[in-house]
Image (cartoon, rainbow, N blue to C red; front, side, top):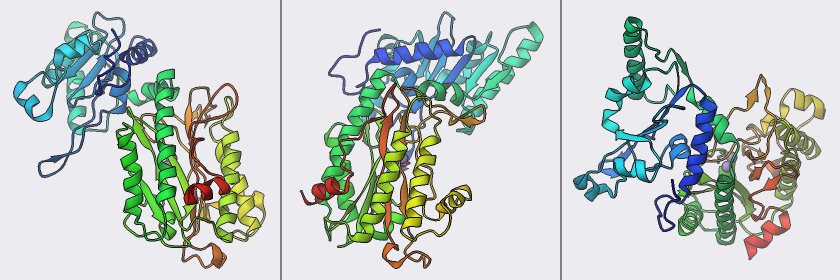
Length: 446
Ligand code: GLY
Ligand code: MN
Ligand code: MN
């Protein structure tokens, strides 16, 4: 299958990369079959629709972008890659645009066979006959589950009569797909780098725009607008702009208050580019200069983040970065009087959770919290080159926490970067985004 035409804005990733991923998936499946559905298409309200975004798993395997689709992989068969898609329909295309249809699925997306999505339930039993193990992600959609379970159990009854092999093992498809998606190939890393570059540029633009009186939503608009102007899909998750005490609300997305002089502003925003998202947080002073107490806490978070990034190395367990961040944060909190007691005990008994209550990162890729297991055989998974993680320690001092020194109350700080595991040093994909006190202040006043 050839690479998609360069001017095809609908499919910016080379089809060859999807073909290579599919062939890895077919190899990993061995003698098993795999069924993956596209994302459901939700309407927003009334007749208004969200822009469609393909499910990450189906996109990963096929590059197929349209709604109402599913992929069936049957390694070693005469049709190892089957796509179910919307057929061409001139009258529907007048409303919703061009469809690749069955022909496009075969000619441009490499399907060995293509059928209308509406025929999936009818065709599934015959296509699964002869396969003993099916990988399928149940529990996401009841209608799909019953289609798949009906096909499998119907086949079981036929098999009992005539000795046909049929699926009698169901395996959660998220296991195999998570393993595949965890280690990024060169095309994926290139797209993540592009997402990271656009994201860094947007955070700098936000620092420049932010000043007393500017609303949180104006900062959001600056960031999300830049993501689109650079050709991204938009934000990979809803942009967080939290001024002052709003920074202490971890998932604050209302973004409707004005920024106030003397406060910090926490921005957590990542551009999704060709379906790969960055995930970056920066915290900066609205008036351009950190106050003494803000700076003290900021430097603790920064030191913890740098220590955690240094733990993102091949062979180290995933949780090493969390342990590194927790140690520096806890020592810092004791130093400045936020916590009382012995550092080892505070770590052991998780006393640090009073002001640091979330994990230090997650896998990153097609999803902001990307697919893949964090534990293997009951232990934290060793990192391998090609994995991408976020590193995002923070401190959040509730405004009404009377146990905290008054000067620190209401301060929320997080610093988050995206890191590629390599054979050598950690590769900080988002290094272009300022984070030292001097660089952040320069960007805010620049
Ligand atoms: N932006 C989501 C997260 O940091 O996990
Ligand atoms: Mn994150
Ligand atoms: Mn984030």
